[in-house]
Each structure stands twice: as C-alpha cells, then as structure tokens.
Length: 576
Image (cartoon, rainbow, N blue to C red; front, top):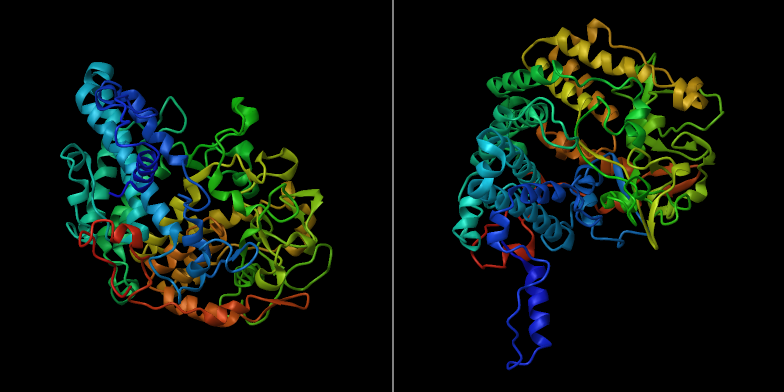
C-alpha cells in the first residue's frame, strides 16, 4: 500500500542532507517493531484512535459519498470549484483523479494497518498481558475495527486489496493485488471478521466507545442486507435479485439487537444533541469531545464535519452539505401520510408563523435549517437568507443534525471550527429499519408495519420539546394496515421512512444503490433540481450537466495515485 506521506517526508529529508552527512539515529515519532509487539494494549488503543482520525477531505462518515452523491443534498461552499466534491454530486465528470479519493483510501488503509499491528502484538504478547480469554476478546475488538474500515473501503471502491496481519508480517503489501479476491469473497471476509467479533465480544463493555456483541450483530445485519440484493451493479442488483436466506440472516442478527439494552430515544431531536450522544439510541459511535470536557486545546473534535456549519452563524461556518429541495418536498404529508406520487409536483417550503394548508413530517424541522426558523431550536439564532454563502448556486437550506446548538460554543482554531459531535456508526432506529426491510421481503408485513409505525409515533411525539414553533405546520400519522397488504406499497413505505428518518446522515446513495434504483432516481432528480427556486432566487442550475451512468457509477473509481503507484498491481473498476 502506498505510504506517500512517509515517502514524501523521507525524500525531503534526503534533499536537505548531503551524501556524507548520514546520521545513525532512531526515527522519532515511530514505534519500533519490538516495542509494538510488547505493547498490545497500546496497539489496540492506537487502532481505536484511528476511528476518528479523519478530516473534511477524507471524512470516514462518508457524507460526500452518501449525501452529496444522492438526491438529498447539494455540495455547498463558495462554488462548484470549492473542494473536489463537485464531481461526486453530478457524476458525469467523475474520474479517479480527485485527491479526496486518494486521501480517503490512504487513511482507511492506515486504520487497517494499525489493526494489523495490534493483531500481531496480541499474537506475540497478548496472552501474557491479558490472559487467554482477555486476549481473544481484544482480538475480537480489533477484528471488528478492521472490518469496519474494510466495510467502508468496499462500499466505496468495491475491488480493494485485502491486507491482513499475514500480509503485513510477510511484508507483501506492495505485492497484493486488488483482484486476488472477488467482490463476493471480500464481502465474506468482512462478514467473517464481524462474526468472530460477534462470537467473542460481550453484550456490554465496561468502557464506553468499545465495540461489543450488539454492534457486531448490527454490522452483520447490514452486510447481509447489502449482499441480499446482488453484487452492487444495477443490472444484477435490486428487488429481482433478492436472496431470502440472507434476508433471514438480517432478521436473526437484528433479533439480537432488538433484545438488547438499546432502544428508541424518546424525542427525535435529542438524538442529535451532544447531551444525548451515548444514549440508548447509540449502538456504536465514533467518540468525540469538546476541549472543555477533556481539558485540551481543541478536544477530540469531529473534523469530518468542519465545513458543515452554516454561514454567518459559526465563526468559520463554510456552509457545505446543503439539503435539496427534493428532500424538503419528501417531508410533505397529506392527512399525515407521505405524498408518495405527488411530493415533487410543486416546490414548497414552510415559513415560520405563516399559515399554510401544506403540512409536514416533524422530522423536517429537526433535519433541515430554513430561513425564518430557529437554528437547532434556539430562537436567538434564527436563520435568515443571509445565512447562505452562495444562494444562487446552492439555495438557502442548511444541515442541522451534525452540529451542536450555537449557544454551546465551538471547538475553534482560526479559520476553522470543529464540533464535539459523535459520528453514529449504528443507531438503533437504523437497525430496526433494516429489520423492517428484511421482514417485508420475507412477507412478514405486519411486523414491518409495527416497526415503521413505532418510528413514526416517535416522530409524532417529537414536536413540543424542541420545535413547538412549528407545531401548526406538522402532521404525521401511522400507516393503516392497507399500506402493507402488497409488497410494492410496503417497500415504498420502507424506502420513504429510511429517507426521512436518516436524512442527511450519509446513507441515502448507498440505499439507492442497494435497491437497484440509483440511475432512475438520480437522473430524474437532476432534471428537477436544476429548476429550483426559493423566494424568487433560482439555484441548482449546474445539474444540467449531471448524469449517472449505470454499469459504471455504482462504485467509485480506484484512486489514480493508488492505481499507478505499483504499475499493473491494481485493476480499475469497470468503465472508468
């Protein structure tokens, strides 16, 4: 695997040293192999630390690839050339060149590397430090973490090299091709890792933030749900390719989650406030902190979302991650139920205090920041049209879930700010929606309806505490039994619920790909969204250049720098 930053540092060092000036000293900031192998606990901690070692140009929560690449979101920022993410939202110009791809690949593999070193240390010294049982449990944690990084790599790039501790010990990293295993075999390897974790981890850990059996069960359910639909390419993925045995696996593993200590947090708005970040809703999350919490200069901040604070509200709010009009329209309700067929026939948006016959699912006001409404529930920080950085390109909406309330302050380092918000890997509701999806495919309709209605009931109860100012504009009801008498309507309810419940949480594109609906959905979205208007201001017109090509765009290309680091070692994904 390419270690370009280490190579660059070494090259610069040699350039500044004459041939006769070599000095025999130990490298600084590097743990030597012997010390590492004698320190398994420290190596395990190092692997955990990598969970949050991301940055806005390589966010491990994948918001540019799950949201910007979907119909939920516009990029935002100062314009289309601000970062390399524009290609991800229009698809038609996507190549392997953006540096963001290269950085993400490199740093996810850095996580894999730390896991491999930890596994070698556990093999060498684990039993003497932890005892036999403790060694196995730590190994299960590390294999969970390695599978977590690999899940993201495969989700993004499909054909990736499998670098495990054996490859690491044999120093064969740069001889390992990305075609050694098929996509199906890679998915099975990830499943095997999570299965080992599931079999050997406790249901609860004494220390917060550690992987446990329930997190492993959640990941196993997600893996089986993905492969139950096919191989990811649209021609061979979707409802026509359902594997019911895999769907039963989803039921089996979500049974474990359903019977655990986790559950629905009572108010939807609380899920996205730091005060509740490790509540019963949070099965597994990347832990972050504020400098006031841990007495450091900047805390263990979440730098992945640093661009996503709204313009003019935060000290360095760069106004990325802008909800789309299509997403706002999807929250429309009629008699409390979604307007499945008519939601996008006209542009609509609520105005605070203005009477209207159009009603909305309450989750809109927890997800999308809109002019005239309080920002994250605080009236003293009410949004205006001035809080959009480039409205003629990206409109006036902003994202709210990934930021704290403004009154709570910020972890700030001019000209950047960061937020002490955990990144959910799994929250309970997401796992229950995976369960409902599998139940529908196994014709257990009433059980699926119960789950979805429980989630809608929670949304219905999530008005008074935080968004009382929008109460007159909210209307949401539970699905009657008639909506779950045929599979196609039930599927539509499930798809809608995932979009509204998990909006702007980085999952939308990957859902569309799983269902085999990406090209149809996105190309229709591009046609509509280029005609966006808010209060007379047109925006989104750059979508006239957008197009999604099935058979190519389902997965992202292997980064150019990686592809040619060792010529001929890696094979590019098809049609790039």
